[in-house]
Image (cartoon, rainbow, N blue to C red; front, top):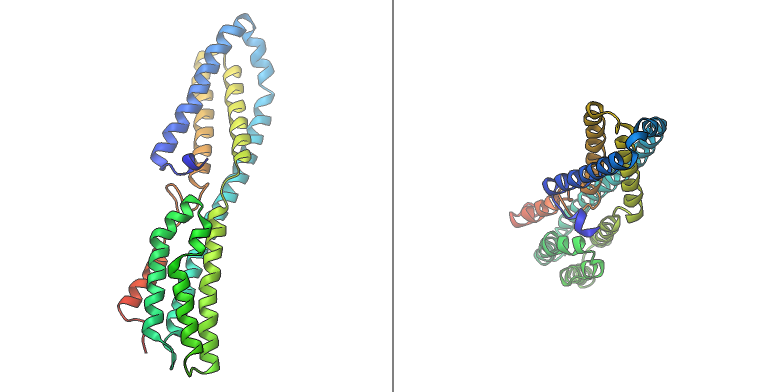
Length: 262
């Protein structure tokens, strides 16, 4: 599953087309040889199954694609929240008595590590290493040292601690979002229903060469595109449509340009 979801769309779509199309060709050759004089009767028997198999595949694919699109959107939202909470921490670090330079330097280092090494860790499923990174521990320690060793006002200290805790919470939300991949069983059931629909379309048209080209090709295209789209959306941090860390990197750029300053 990890191998499939990590492929780019321009590899994934042709690959799925070749697999489904190959199944259709094999089914055509086998059914032609086995059915022979019973081709017309087999087509009659296959006809009532087409609506049932078509509806089953449509329901399964629409449910799976909608669920994966929701996971993709949720991952993008988490990145946005992490960016917002990081900006809040950067502003909170400008309070009188706070170690502004130290906190913003630690924050920029942690966000840079998250956008680079952290994304690789999320892609590989290494949640522990992501949540226990040295840069994140350094950020937490720097903020707390500043709060406990300075004469900051209670509201300013509370705001600073609340902001850094929110950054930590968004990190855990990122690992949760990265772990929400397409269930293998669901993909298997959907693939089997698509194959059943394709084979049934072949049997339906086995007695007609002219009709077969249009019907079977249409089913192959539909099944292939649905399966390929599902795999493209299956993992928010892998493949073509992976979640981007640009919102986090934008905060780092603003820190480096001195945007968050008194």
